[in-house]
Image (cartoon, rainbow, N blue to C red; front, side, top):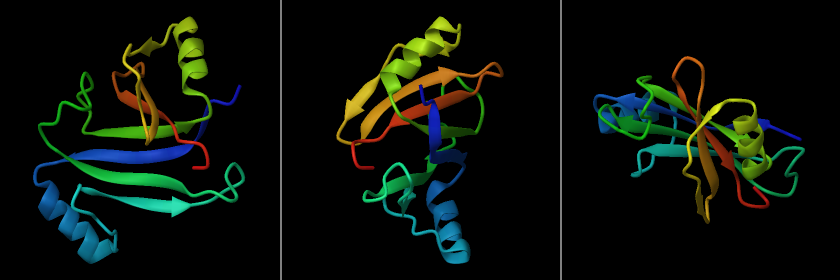
Length: 128
């Protein structure tokens, strides 16, 4: 079974997301959008005719989205089959959150690593 197939996104907290986003846009050329982040598009061996994305996004310093982690960041990993992987991780004793979100953006699940960091797992929609 394939597990992680790539990085889906990098998210981190900011004291002032709008100002920090403007800095990244001005100085590093990241096309920060009104929603607070940017999507880098690419294709690869698993989707040579599709479009993959890696999201870069700022969150307010007081966001609860990373909870229960106290880390100021969260990495989103692309996975091939979210439900199969979550089942395997549970059987291996990994702390897996019960909630799974499914939408037009794909399937999302979360685990907590041994140091308490929340990790987001993302199965992109077909073709991405």
